Image 1 (spheres, rainbow, N blue to C red):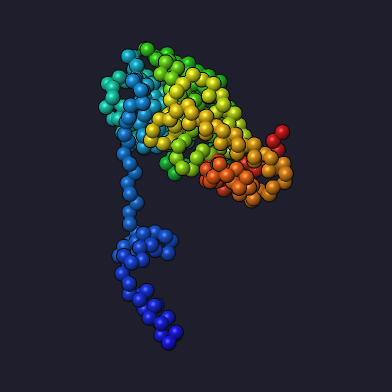
Image 2 (spheres, rainbow, N blue to C red; image 1 turned 30 degrees about the vertical axis):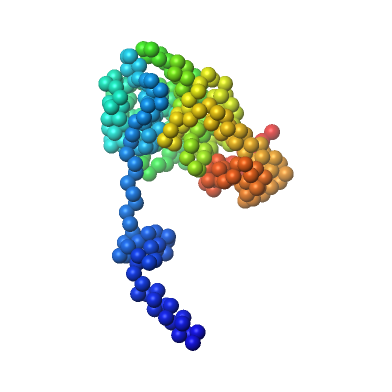
Length: 315
């Protein structure tokens, strides 16, 4: 009897339509033997943050558009490629007919730096920290070369070391490099008249949380110190590198506290001899208020060796 029951179950599994078993062996949804197409990415959209300040979401990291009476100051240039560049320009034209006069790029990753070359070709000053240009030239601190399926952004035509101020019409923008955080060449762009800061991927609101790109000079331990410096500025609104809405200074303060907790707990555990393959689990279990926030971002598999070396040797 038991043997007959097993045979019946196996037979049913063979003839059952695909709709009853929607997932293939790799967890892919299938129908009639083919994988369903991935949904298209959401289109770019522009939203007003404050009078004269807009953010363009999707198509890469967020871009900020500061409209002045003499032109536009743009922060970040979307994914590499003509389509993304053209879409970004089209979004800007929905809010102003003014031309882009200055561009700041917050860091080296192509979803923010992708269209540097397009603006340089148009004769626009594209301003980055010198660390961004170095990462493009040398492939980051590990020297393995800049790698991205989309390709490599062009180099900027203006660099700075610690800070750079631009005044355009009725607005001022100040670029700051406060140290190593998401990468070793991060830029914070501050609009003091609007009380807005643009942080690129030093501040993200996606579920994975932030990450420290060690090959390009990032640092888990320096990250909270950098955000602490940002918090000294006079602002009330933050435009994140990813996330569809502007955030508040209180949001950034809470974020900094999480980063600081992770950094201190990481050093404490490493000094106690916690093995590398156990340190993430120990961080999570000993800091329950952090939850899984750091597991997929700050301390991830690809950078675990570099992270562990940093916290193990911290003074």
